[in-house]
Length: 166
Image (tube, rainbow, N blue to C red; front, side, top):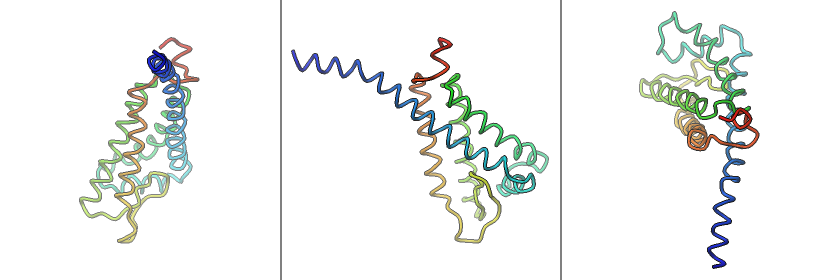
C-alpha cells in the first residue's frame, strides 16, 4: 500500500516537474535563437549576404531577403518561445527551421564546399580543413531535440499560453 501511494504521489508531481523542464527548454531555445539572430542581424548587410550565398542553394534574387529575414525570424521566434505564446506552434516552426539548417549543412558538405555555416554570425568561404560540419549537424540536432520537447510538452510554467487559456 505504501509503495502504491508513493508511486501515485510521484506520478502527480511529474507534470509539475515537466512544466519546469519545459520552461528551462523554452529559455534555452530562446537564448540560442536570440543569440544567433542578433549575431546575424548586427552584421553588415554585405556579410549577411555572403553567409547566405555561400551555401549556393538560393537564386541570387533571394539571397538579400533571406539574409535580412532569417535573423528577424530567429529573434521573433525566440521572443515568442520565451514568453510561451502558441508554444507548440512556435516549436514546430523552430523544428522546421533547424531541419532546414541541418539540410543546408549536409548539402554543402556533400557538395564539397568549404564554408563557415554562419549560424552565429560570420559565414562564407573558409580554408579546407576549417569546416566543422559534423559538429554543426550534431549541435543543430540537439537544438531540434529541444524543439521536439516543446512540441510534445508545450505546457510550461510562466507561459503566456496558460494565462490565455490555450
